[in-house]
Length: 81
Image 1 (cartoon, rainbow, N blue to C red):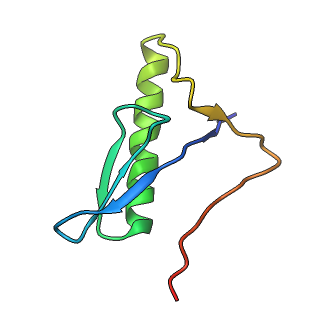
Image 2 (image 1 turned 90 degrees about the vertical axis):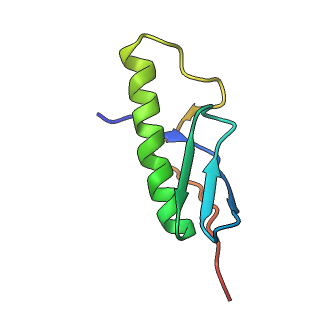
């Protein structure tokens, strides 16, 4: 069974018009994309690889990274109007 984690991202628009994501929950996570959605998807892939690396090396996961309850998902999504 796959474990899912809650990951809070900070996403800001950078000078070249792209979006840059980082996370205080998972140090080392940096992702950049053309849109917010693309940036989130890339950030998920980077987070997955970082978490796998922690596990493979027997390292303790960062405290900010919290396992999700499989029954409830909370999500903040941007809505352009």
